[in-house]
Amino acid sequence: MVQQLLKFFIVFFVVVEPISLIPVFAGLTEGASDLYKRKMAFKSCAIALGICVLFALVGAKFLQIMGIALSSFRLAGGTLLFLIALEMVFARPSGTRTTAPEEQECARRADVSVFPLAFPFIAGPGALATILLTAGEVGGHPALFAGFLAVVAAVMALCWIIMLATPRLMRVLGVTGANVVNRLSGVVLAALAVQFIVDGIRGSFLS
Image (cartoon, rainbow, N blue to C red; front, side, top):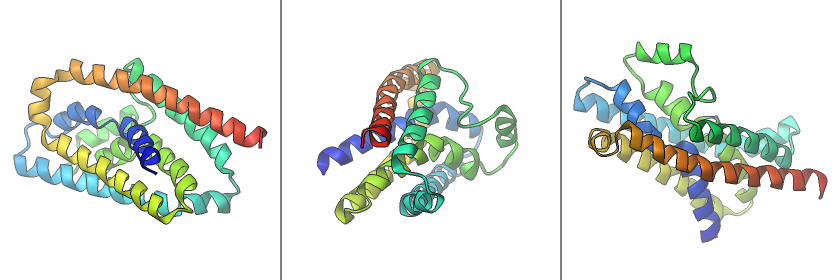
């Protein structure tokens, strides 16, 4: 149980990329008051947590209603995570999170907690796919499922702490340091994505 939760924590932490929130949050809240920054950090993490918990609770049922096998979702989710990993490794603008028009829109918004922070930066497609995959595996074990939700909450809490510490972290890491961490995380995520794909192929064709 501990090993499963630790594995999920690593995967979910890498997918959410809390470190990547440092330059994003700094840019979106540049020139704002400390009160506004604290409000946006807390609100975005709370909303993202709500989205993740909702997907964890009803995601597997939704797949069942749609007639989608978990192994098929593993293939799709693994492919999506691999694309996100490539963007992280090669430091490309993330089309899986926001498009250029969406970035221009969020720059004009007074409240950036829901969009783009909560969705799609924190609870993005990769994070939601990871939650659906894991929830389908642990849904029949109440204790494990509770631990799974606790891990989700822990990662959201880390995102909140990192956003609160953004000014200090930007001075220490800088944009280059944050990019180095993201690239290393991308390599780990690519390997995990391949494992999801292998498991999906095994479940689809070898069961």
